[in-house]
View 1: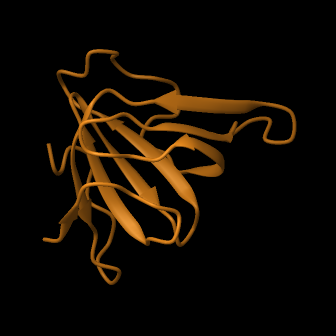
View 2: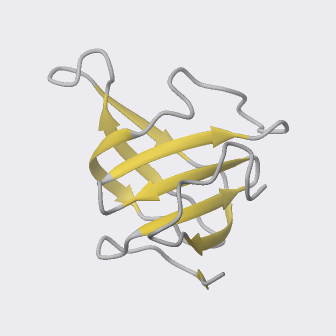
Length: 108
């Protein structure tokens, strides 16, 4: 599987692994999804494992760094914006465009 050190906006579908979670960045659909692992330091959040429409990215994922993404709230997308700040990123791997999204827990 292809791995990279940094994600940029012109890329496609990527699985980003941080210290305790995985994050699916689908830049074709411009969505973000957090999947907490069993040992995630921050635990679970509302609406984990659901794709969210990205509204802006403050920090793109980079191995050894952190990501900071803003997205629409599922219940009130016109008035509320949510965000996620990842823990330190350890791996970024390309997802095959023809394959389905990995199941929650995959890649950890």
